[in-house]
Amino acid sequence: MYLQQSLDKTYAKRYSDFLRERNRLRLVVAAENKSDYQVNQILPGCPLIPATIHLRPYQRQAVASWFANNGRGTLKMATGSGKTITALSIAAELYQKIGLQVVLIVCPYQHLVTQWAKECEKFNLQPVLAFENLRSWHSTLSTQLYNVRSGNQRFLSVITTNSTLISDSFQSQLRYFPEKTLIVGDEAHNLGAPRLEECLPRNIGLRLALSATPERYFDDVGTQSLFDYFGSVLQPEFTLKNAIAQGALVHYLYYPILVELTHAESLAYAKLTKKIGRALLWQQRDNVAIENLDYEDLTPLLVQRARLIGAAENKLNALRDLMRSRRETTHTLFYCGDGTQENRRSRSANDQLEAVSRILGLELGYRVSTYTAQTPLSEREKLRHQFETGELQGLVAIRCLDEGVDIPAIQTAVILASSGNPRQFIQRRGRVLRPHPGKERATIFDMIVLPPELDRETLEVERNLLRKELRRFVEFADLADNAGEARLKLLDLQKRYGLLDF
Image: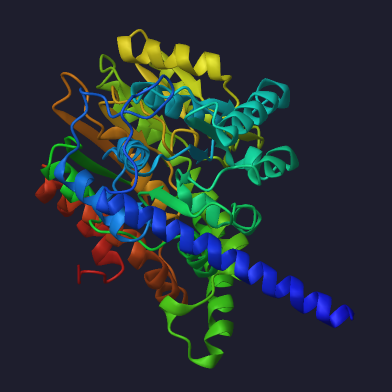
């Protein structure tokens, strides 16, 4: 008896999934054929592409690719190339063609919710912002979902954060989202994390992921889970080179600044690299190629070494030398590491953010302010305005400017620290290259730590670890307006490690 009930439940679930998938495909086919639904009147809160927005050819192709892929897919487009507008255009087109009822946008951070809200307003939307205080959105969301399902409201747009998405209060609402719902995952690589991926709504069939870097760093399983849910990467992939060529991003000058480690830092670096080498050697006992190794067990060691590099003491000296001759420049962003750098005299851990702010503000008289995840949203808006007007010459930031934040007035970036994650590198350069009135070209100063002299065994480990990172630097140098000068500066690093093959 129990076995039969279990089989009945399993069959019922599979049949329900089949019906849901069949209906989703019918919706998309109907939309593609433009034969199923036509909205004759645009009401307040319903999606409408504004007359001032004209999609670029690659954006139109991305929209077409998503429809051709049966309403699923991942847009891999360079930071600043217009993923937000492309996504909202898809929602507007779905509304016109099939009567889309809900668009649910999921963002990793609160400041991205407010940024999306501004873009949604341009598309005639009145989104419910579901984050922070439960009382501020839960009742409104419940009411509007009921109104949509009962036919009393034509359209509902909801913007939430990753953390709110996985909360019990939001999860309890997902079952009431109607069949004609589109979910948009912004900076979707974050949604490949196990806790987030398992909370993505399976009852929503129309799915769109946005990311310049959808592949998760050292997480093939998470990457595949992301693609399994949202769909594979769609054509065209829009690279940084494409974006600059088509005017979506501005041209730039790239100046690598090579920094040596101190003696104490060199010893610590060599020690960590030897430990990493031993761990790799242990994994290679089964003759696994270096590019296929599982780096999960190495993460703590790699993080320690990345923090050591990010907080290298000589970077502060390099910053002084650079900015002494640039005291009148404005619209400059300073990216700091999230580790600490050791002050030899006090032997206390000083945050690099504070050290950079002190050098710029107190020593050099540069008008700067810090911009971190702890900065309140209202204060961030104030700082952004002061930065854009030139009242502040610079912002000193950690990681909160890496994903999605739009401050196109940035003309110069000084990158003191980057993680080994290529996503961070890609996101940061995209931040700086966004177009802005009067901004013809951007300038990037990139501090690159020269690893110390190592013994033969450790040197081979270092070459393998450095190869991918150096390839990113070389690629970025090649796309710069001063490519020859930038590549020449990187030549010392390539020679030291015998990496002259690219």
